[in-house]
Image (cartoon, rainbow, N blue to C red; front, side, top):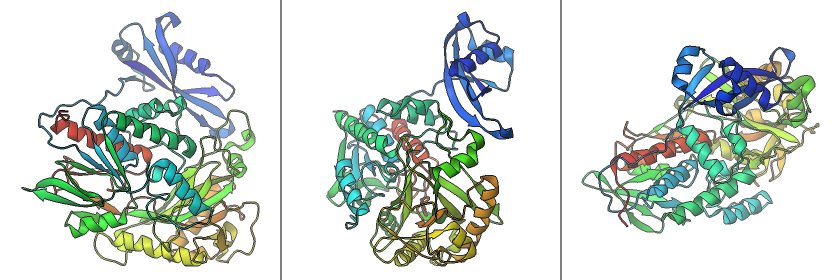
Length: 531
């Protein structure tokens, strides 16, 4: 147990020891009473025109932390008990290893925890291992053919691998600490434990994922690359096997962690009468600025000061029933070609750990609901996504180039004729297009209003030479695979829908947490395998 002292406001030039000294004083302690002290979280605050560091400090003391906490009775001081590791409490025997379908964040963390406890999971991944996936992605970026098995969406690590590796989340689940601890154990920088906006970066995340895979194998797990889940069989009303592209695998329990782009899997589930429902998601564009523009808008006169991280923003507003917001912001990053089906253009964002690129980019997305989908039924959102991605493909010239428009021209509803100071980073090439005609009219109108509104919040955001690249359609899954309070599909007990693809997460951290939750469900019912 320890004490967390939050909201310690220090000057920008201060060092960690200044904040720690303040925390000790606020607790009325002598330094000799403190067994250990460290920074718990650190963020920056530029409100009221002056830049400050905002610390949360963790103190372990010689004495009764509970009694001190109660005596201090301060809203800025709380008790912290480290999140315990999940424990096995089940008593049923498994005849076969659990099967984990998908090796993105949810599947990785589920499989890793299962392997650590002796369950020897069998992991299915439709794409290839990291080295082969990297070659396929780089080939596509360079103008080669789209590999339908290995691309930005599919392969070892899932869609999160080719991203900024952002670990920020709003879910507030104590399992987040377990996720950070595991990432650090497999090579992530220790700073993710203390940063208010932790990130890993694509370059480091790839190696971390490979290290996790190797550990799963060392602990008795099996990973079958280039293997898709094609269906699920039942006996006596419960799951008994998974049909795959490489044969049938018997099992009593399977975790469905296939990611938000496994459209063919959702179609097969629907055909098998597994309960699904259409869910809201968002559509939009990628917006790119020079990173220095964002830094000036956020930091003002402090922009460029040593030690300041590249500027990172989160913007949102509502207009009636719809919202518009920035998403997956990548400081110093690039826009990537994220198609997973032929004849479609999709964008995403990526940056390295250093975030040292010239441009900043983010998704700028507008919410849509099942009422917006022309097609009926739970797969209507998939049809809607495909329609938009096909329009983007044609607007870009039908060769996987992306349609591009400068912000000033988008606001005036004019096709751009020339670029300004921002050069698009989308790797497959680009063509000027009027993005308002590619997106639904309601989305285009809200994007225009929001860009202007966001320019008032963040100076420079509505710069005329900022670049919009279309389209961003994979913000989250358009489908929810229903599950009960026990996490099982109500259509097929033994099947655990999990993670972002199943509609229960949004981003690396929340998907990983849901993977841990799925592993805990297995721990609560079954014993590890007897080898």
